[in-house]
Structures are given as structure tokens and as C-alpha cells.
Image (cartoon, rainbow over all chains, first blue to last red; front, side, top):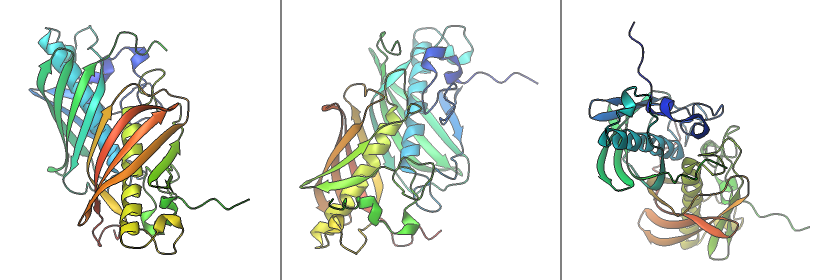
Length: 161
Length: 161
């Protein structure tokens, strides 16, 4: 069996791996994991029954969280690739860590609860310390939400608190 | 002692009160509660230690969730007031329930973790079934995130699933 490649978030250093959305060390969090697949990034996430909006549908804040963490990971991989470090492909060097400058989500239709969701993203623009990422959430192959995130390279003094 | 007025979400009917963000019947959710205070709406929320982004700061997805539920409640109260039902002031009639059409959040600065946050909102425009709401998150009186939500009146067949 070939070894599963690491998720982008698996490469975040330990002191930056507690995020409620995607931190592998947060025992109460969502554990969103994002993989580089060709030119795209892909996350799969199955919301819990408690992640409900109204009966049958996923809460919009969880969808926003998916788009948020998926997009900052996509930004990290894109910046690493642009600087010659293929962080998402198993390099030893941790990818740069991004924070969210702005988040926009268009809820295209209700997202059904109880099935795996797929998020696909792509970096659209790298400009200095900023990466613009577009991410779309799919349920059963149908796009239910589309997001745009402006991710900003984390200041060096973050996460030292 | 005067009785505390109900939160807007306290007036949602039971079958629409399971939302992960603000449902009083969701035992795992955030239980965001929003009050009409004069022309504004106000929510107070203290994130849990697990609601972390990086050490010392609140996760952006939780902030997006606060803005989301605060804003749909603000839309409900505004629509009720516009139609003559002062739902937020204790009328027996439940307020109309809104879903999120789009959500935009600008993260102005890192939001410190471990203290109460205050969200203040206002409906800017009511247009048919849509209400545009602006909501701002404050920590220690300083604005840390500003959101705009386009809330849409929930279709009648929602929440019957």
C-alpha cells in the first residue's frame, strides 16, 4: 500500500496546529484536512448531526469554517509552490501559515446534512503577502456554496502567546 | 427583579431551534443569543478555549458563525418590526426565520481569546424577502471583525425534513 500523502495541515508546526477548524491537536475541532491534487486542493468533511441549521441541512457557519480552513491551506500550498517549496508534496519544510483577511461565502442552495462534502479550491492570485483563494463546497457533486478568501501571511509574532 | 426579555432566538419555533450556532435545543452548539436594544441588536458570546485559531486568538470560523446567527436574528427582528410585529419585544407571534444568502467578514485585527465578545448589528435594507444586515464584533470595546449578511426569508418547506 502506498503511504497516504500528508494533508497540508499535517505539516503545520505543532504550536500552530490547534485551530478549531483544522488543527490536528484540537480535540474538539473539525479536523479539516486538505490535500493538493494536481492544480486543485481537495478536502472531504462529513458534518456531524449537531452541525445542523434546520432539519436536513448543514449550518452555514460550518460551511464558512470549511471554506476558511480549506482556503488558508490552499494559500499555504500555493505560496510554498511559488517559492519553490512543494510543501504539500511532502517536503520537510513546513508550509507558511496564513490567517484570514476576509471571507466571502455565497450560499447557492441548502447543503444536505448527513453525507460527505467535498471542498475544491484554487489560488487565484498571489500578491506580496496575500493569496486570493476560491473554494467551492459540493454535496453529491452539486455545488452548494462558493467562497472567496483573502489569506494573509501570518505575522511572525503570531502564535507565540 | 424585572424579567429578562427573550432573545430573538428564544422565539424561534421548536422545529427551527436546533441550529449549531444559535439553536437553544442544540446541546453541542454555540447558543448565540441576540437581543434588540433600541435600534441595534446585541449578542454576547465568550468563546471556549477550543475555539482557538492560533494561541491567544479566536478562530475565524467561530467569528463568522457569530456574525451569521446574529445577523439572521437581526433580519428576523427587523422584518417583524417592519410588518408591525415587535417579535423581539415579546410578542407571542414567532419572528420570521431567515437563512443566509451570503456572508462577508472582514477580519480587522486578531480577536483575543478568553474574554467576552460583543456583536452589534443593524438591518440596513429590507427588500422583498431579503434583509441586508451589518454586524460588528468587539473585544474589549475594539472592533475586531465586521460582517455583512444578506439574509433571505426561509422558504415555507424548510425545516420539515
